[in-house]
Image (cartoon, rainbow, N blue to C red; front, side):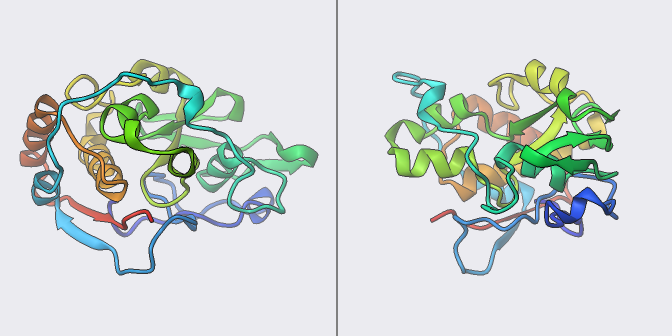
Length: 229
């Protein structure tokens, strides 16, 4: 993840307090799957070079294999993972009613640089989509690893963005799709690579070449990640 960004006030506190950060591009939510080791920090180009290269394998993929959304990291707030991410990334916090119903609030959609004022118009996106995860090594995972990935609130796995931008992305990798806001390309590339390193996922050759090209355009960008257990 890109350093020096804030995230992650508790969900209930967000019901009454606005977030101080206004650029939701990193996640500081507690990750139940993160190891206790110090995070690795690498220049983006070196981080890309750490990715194993392998052909994709889509056989057997079903979205339902990656169970989401679960009850979330906070089992007492009444919110599932999706709602917790939305709450954590609010620029202006919504009110939270019973059943984690959200009203009001404001969000910055980093993919397309839009302000969203209705939580119902947000999608919570996996930086590395579930189908891409499956293609890149998730096909060998069991349910005990698939579910934690699908609900991972650690750094870099999930982000709240406009529904339109998320659906434009679908399951495409950076060789096929990048955010329409070009100023976010370095951050997006770093998040993608951090997620793949965190979860020990591979890149195919076309994807790797695209990532290396992006890294050349982002010489000051670093990648910080912790391996998921």
